[in-house]
Image (tube, rainbow, N blue to C red):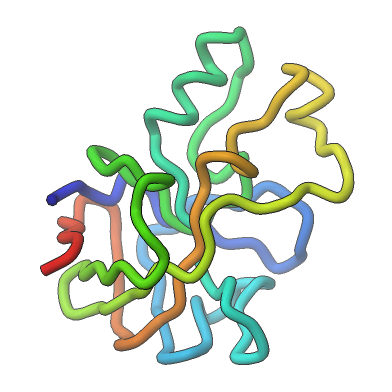
Amino acid sequence: MKGKVISVNVSSKKGVRKKPVPEISLRINYGIEGDAHASSEWHRQISLLAIESIKKMQALGLNVKPGDFAENITTEGINLPELPLGTRMTIGEIELEVSQIGKECHTRCAIYYQAGDCVMPKEGIFVRVLKGGKIKEGDVISVGD
C-alpha cells in the first residue's frame, strides 16, 4: 500500500495546533526534533492523520487545514485507522511502527466545540521511530513492505 505526505507539522507546546514546516528530522525511539510530543519515554512519538479525515471536517463547515488537529504528519491515500498495531511503514529511509490507533481526548478542544466532533481521536494514529532521517511534503509512504 502506498500513500504520500501532504504536510509535516510541529509545535513547541502540547495541546496546540501544529504549524507546517518544510522538513522534519526524526530520531530513533524519540520522534521529531523540536516537537513538544517527542520523547523516548512513551510510544506516541509521532502522530499521523489523513487529509481525507481533515476534509470530513471541512465538509462540516470548519476552516481547518493540516496541522490543526495537532498531527505531525498529514497523509493521503492510506486508511490509517485500519492499520493493525505493529504495522511498519517507510517514508524514504525512515522506518516507523504503528503503536496506537486513535486516542482518548480528556479535554474538549476548540475544534470539538466548533464542530461538535473531532476526527483525531478516532482516525489519527501514533507511531514509534525505528530508523530516523528527514521527511518533507510529497514523500512517498510505503506500508507493510
